Amino acid sequence: MARNATPMKPKPPKPVKRPAGARVANTTLRDRFDAWRLHHRDSAVDAIRRMRQTMVSTVMTVLVIAIALALPAGLSVLLGNVRSLTENWDGNVHLSVFLKDDVTEASQRRIAGEWQQRDDIERVEVVTREQALEEYKTLSGFGDVLDALPDNPLPPLIIVYPASSDADELTQLKVSLGDQPNVDQAVLDIEWVRRLHAMLAVGERVVSALMLALALAVILVVVNSIRLAIESRREEIVVVKIVGGTDGFVRRPFLYTGFWFGLFGGLAAVILVQSTLLWLSGPVNRLSALYNSEFSLTGLGWETLLTLPVFAGVLGLMGAWLAVSRHLKDIEPQAF
Amino acid sequence: MIHFDNVSKRYANGKEALSNVSFRLPPGELTFLTGHSGAGKSTLLKLLMMIERPSSGDIMVEGENINHLGTRDIPWLRRKIGMVHQSHHLLFDRTVYDNVALPLIIAGYKPADIGKRVRAALDKVGLLDKERLNPITLSGGEQQRVGIARAVVNKPPLLLADEPTGNLDPELSAEIMDLFEEFASVGVSVIVATHDLSLIARYNHRLLTLREGELIADREEDGDGA
Image (tube, rainbow over all chains, first blue to last red; front, side, top):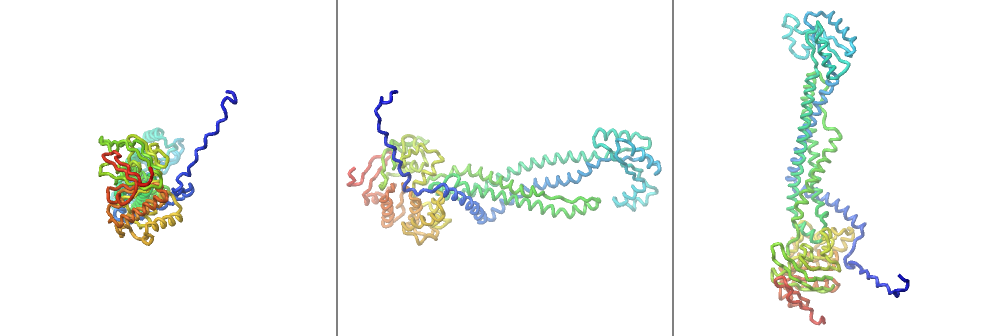
């Protein structure tokens, strides 16, 4: 296009930028951020204040949450204890080889010495008939009864610690020792521990499922509490919406309320579990002392102590979010 | 300022609450909006507040077509509109001061600023000495004035009043009307929706009359030359 084909048109006048909202007092971004922060703080504090105003229902809600969380947490602590109690046994695989009754102590020690040389055996431990009787007397408490017997009913025993804990090799070793001429019976002490562990695994699954179901219950409890809170503040929500409150502004106090419900419920659950364990630890220690065991109950780990309340807080937040998104829409200014 | 262009509103039940309503309100004018109940007053106010959206037609507020606003923009539109209700809509769990401060807190004013503005608004409606009281202890006229203070505290360009004098005796009504005229005189567009014909008769202001959803009369202010 030729340069001068069109005469220079005067530029259209720039649209005069009206001083937007000259009379609407504006706020800077910085002010809004500060206000946003301030509103978070105020909402958090106000939520607690309101929860205190309705103390009875707050305490009930928190307790329901606490119990729902304490149940799976407590069960998993108990399962963990049983597992740790039997873990040592698992690492301590051994065979109890009972010799025939007529084997003398000398030949018992000779047999043990021979076995000690085998490659598939790490070490052996000799328990003579006298030692077995002594031990049985102390542990069983049937000392008097045993004294009354004419002779020692217990067979000579060699405890065999295998070199490998592989299931196949263990079975092989058991069969090979059981076939020896002086051996009455070889018993692998590990089998019931294995079964117990399988049962524990089932138990842990059950606890996980329970945890899931009860986490859902916590969410539902919070949904219900927040629904009631929303209902009781209907008028306030209407006013806030009329004067231009955003959905976030309206939501915020309820989300904090849900979070606090969860957090306090989680803290109460931790206290519940720990105090129950404390209450159990006396009898458990006495029981374990009777079995000559060093075992004592382990409580919730530090991680769980911290994560359970936070986890519960998140559940509360989720519940509040559900309730708020479900019910706030229904509340619109209508009164004209 | 406000411009209705062929606005119609048909509700889901088929009832046409507004039919082809057009009018233009310049800034700084006080306008009465009247009509029997069911004539469409409420619908018109709801459209302005974006509680409802028009079925057809355009509504301009401050040069902006509010049909183009999304749901997320509604709060910002409402901050430009001060709303006064017959039923006050005051919150009785907090003081007069906190009621009036609410729009400022929502809009994100600095705390120091909030104090100044709330007191200025309360001073305007003559309730500066009542800021620490709970509004439930105030008379009907005083409650209405708290509502007005809350509506104007962030200096909105538009003030909507829905039956603002509904529960008040003539003397208090006059006080309220004086306040509205004052706001109009500093450039605020004021719409007073009322079916109180004696109130309308006492003041010489523009009057929009709705009947069955149609704008049947548009009385200009006398001597306005329009």
